[in-house]
Length: 110
Length: 111
Image (cartoon, rainbow over all chains, first blue to last red; front, side, top):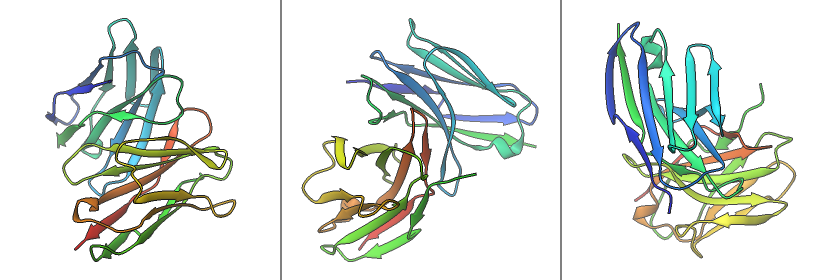
């Protein structure tokens, strides 16, 4: 059974800081997803990756398949980045059955 | 930009009642999913649906749950006899290839 662990659970940063959120998983996967959940509850997909690195604006996601580890980086953080960031993994070629981490609650102070 | 929509946004029901949660996935997507998130807990997979049938389901998705795609646009989750522990946020998602797009969720409260 795949377990998804995220760290840290909570993170407080000052505006402008570089932020890193980590995710590790225990079994080989087909893809890893980074998601953002706002206080209202809605979930937004940020990245889906199976190798290497992806960048979108100030967000960068990397994955190391051999080490079963992924990181989400936020450059020049802003208060509007405050949200819960969730790592989820899919495996076995399935188009579903994502296994979710518990999330990292990020608060960026002005 | 196309998006997944869900109705209602909040549903309050009495224990033992049937509820139907509705979702309209993105129109050209082929895979549909339901997830739930109990307050303060992580998101959990319930069921995936492809080609008009269930492709995968979790242990949570027991006989009290069913899904349907009654027409070309709607995707529904039915809970036949709600229990207190069914209180949660229910998310619908859809995908074409890989990346899943989530709806805003329906908050179900069972009294």
